Length: 158
Image (cartoon, rainbow, N blue to C red; front, side):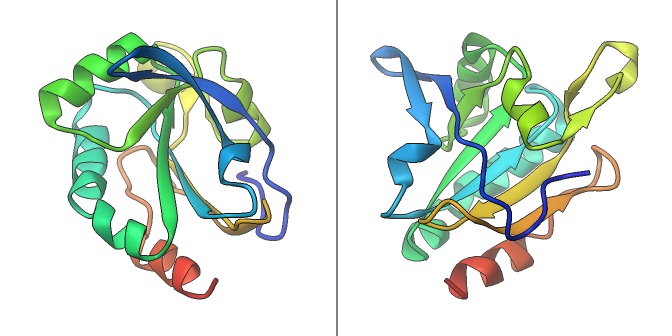
């Protein structure tokens, strides 16, 4: 079960691919200044994950207007994420949780996806600038998308 609203968000630093190569991205970089939307997704190059990340990419300005950054996290390598993002035109920052430490810290492990192993469940969190989770959702199945209207409402309430 995903971490609850009111919980202090576990900090993390994960790898992401940028134009300059691998970079470290931490939740703490937004501390005290911006909210963060964290979207866990099972796997790059899959239909529902592609739909979700492309839809969020298309609406990034809406999140910027709400003074929030969006981070996508999966258990894929940063190299696979970068290839997928390039192929699909995904521009949100994708972070690699290859060892599943952040997935476990947020309690969103999806065990044995399609018989290939544990991945991140599809989940969404809004973390305020103070580091508190103000919205938390784990979808019933990996095929279900988070309720983005509730995510936006949580951001508007900050």
